[in-house]
Each structure stands twice: as C-alpha cells, then as structure tokens.
Image (cartoon, rainbow, N blue to C red; front, side, top):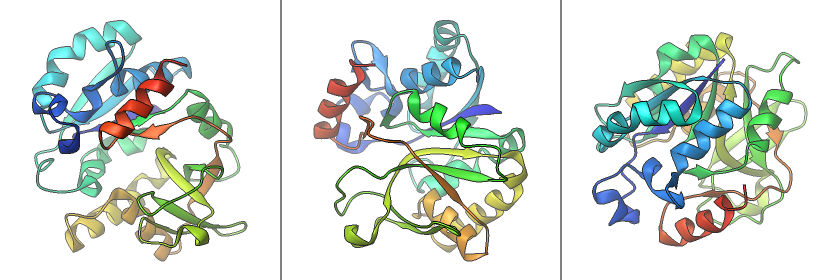
Length: 245
C-alpha cells in the first residue's frame, strides 16, 4: 500500500497565498504545509512511497520534491492533472488510477488532521472491505460539509453535500483507504462521473459505486480535531490545530 495525496487544486479563496502556490503548500504551522502533514502521517504509519497528483502551480511541488523526500523519508511520484484548473477532483483522482493497483491511502491536500486518522483506517482493514472512508460522527454538521448516510449492514448509502444535515450519519473528512482489488471498479466509476459532469467531486464517484451495488465502508475517527481548508477562516483553524500535533 502507498500514500496518495490530491494536491492539484487552486484554492482561489486562499489568495494571496495561492497566487504562487497550490493549496497543499500553504503553510499551517511555521513552514509546515498541509502536504507536509500528510507526508509525515504516511511515513509514521510505514507508507514511504507516495503519489501526489499535481496541477495548479505544480512547479512549486516539483521544486520541493527532493526537499520533501529528504524531510519525510518518502519517495514521491508526481502525477500531472492537465485539467486541474478546469475540472473538479473526480478527474483528479482518476489521474492516479494506475497506482490504485498498489492499494492506496488517500488524503486530500487540504485536510489538516492527526496521524490517528491514518491509523484508524489501517486498523479497520481485514474484514473484506474494499473501500473505507474516514468519517467524523461527532461534529455538528452544516450545509457545506460532505455528508454521509450509512446503513449498519450495507455501508454507505448516500454521500453528498446536498443533504439535510439531520439525515447524515457523519461527515467524510477527505481520507479513504482503497484496497488494490477495488481499483478497476473505482476508476470506471470516476470516469463515468466526470464524463457525466466534469465539475463533480470524486465523492460522486463513490456514490456511483454505491449505485452499482458496490459496498463502501466507513471507519469513525472519534473526537478528533481536523479541518478542511477552503478559505482564510479555515486556514486560521488549521493553524490552531496543526501546532498541537
């Protein structure tokens, strides 16, 4: 199994930081970036091969590749997303389809979170699950969150932002364990998703899988401090949290 980070996004709501950097390279603790946190977490759980999907301001990641590898003791493979500024992240994840066959632990490049999340996902393996989503079942939800409805026996039934928060079991936090045997089916579902609408999320690809009868499982992360960084308010929260790890 390898690590996988989606780091192709522009993060326009984080300007001026993202005038010259992709969102994943915005500092959250001194010089530590969101990408640093993901790589450090992967290394701590023994994943030293990491693929990173790059797009917007990708040159900044290429320039730091050797430095990041040395700092975290990992080997990076950078995967170019040629439509990062045009299409949403269903296509971005599809760009990494060749590494799915190795089994991946996926982390969004804008999620500040502790290594306990990776450990929770890895500990949840072993009962035939093919895809496991990290789920926050503690947080109070609002309209913007990626909400999930789970059936105890059938797994994920619905995953979307477009849902009454009261219906949801919890919030998907942007980390997924994808076993190798799920790779081909996931790639096909992602392709169907972005071909239907290039602006759809990769979570819509998970919904496509569920609609096809594929079981997607979840692992509750417990009472964990984390944040998805979309804007400057989120960035402030991320900086409060990151310095505690």
